[in-house]
Length: 379
Image (cartoon, rainbow, N blue to C red):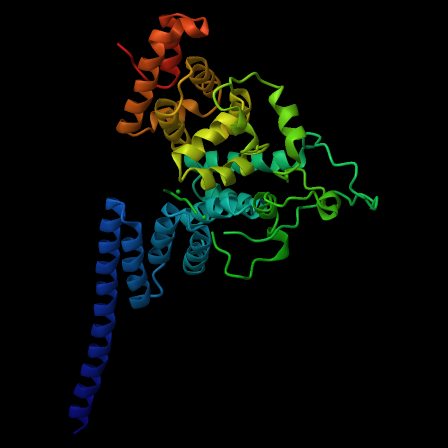
């Protein structure tokens, strides 16, 4: 009888272990299916399979970190932050999780937290250039916030209460919502007040009044879109731009002052080529170059090339945009990462520009020399 019980106990233990092993193997299969869909670019489907894998084996850190990457591709930054946080609880030294969460937090305006995450990732992977680039972006953005912004005219007829200017501090901001080693956020509703910093500056641009609270908070990067025509006129004097074709369009779109504002506007206007054309046209090329600087991404370059090809008619306008883009620090990297189709679009732009070189006071060799900056070879 004792022997029988022993056999039963051993068999039970074996069965439990066997079931556990089966669940883990099934979870791995689900993850592999998710990877297949991810490679195909079907990120929503990949998320489904990563989620199943997490349910089957909640202690495996790679599942939530993989799901974070899929969310990042969909620009669901809050979900990225959440999944990376889950993954880091399971594996506290995972550089990819820190990287992706850092990018997500950057996109949400949580720059201080993003800097910490990216620094952790760099400590773990000191030779990873992509992490270095992301960290440089965040540091540069923080510097922009700390620097005094351009003086904006404030309506004198507004009755200011002359409240004393508070000491400089981190911006108080409302939460908002959206790349291999990583891309990006979470706001599970528990984000602390210290991390609310940048987002209000990005989302409250549609207010029709420059309120007293705006003055008292003195956000150096918070530019109200309605600080009006006077601001537009003053900014437009910086660089001459041909607007004879559609003179009204510059009043339709505000000119961004920082990369954070540009990124916010881009996500809004990039859904429509007509809107994106008007937005790019509204920004003086020299100003666009200054804003993008070290932030020029392949996505921006590809879309701008498409707009130049499909929407621009004036050769000087096209040349000015290309010339000032060539002055950005990241052009070489962004151009080298263009997909073949996007490179073809850029080639079309230059080939179209060459016959019109005399219209901008240049010759064919000048245009061809400029094309080399974009990694474009014209025969």
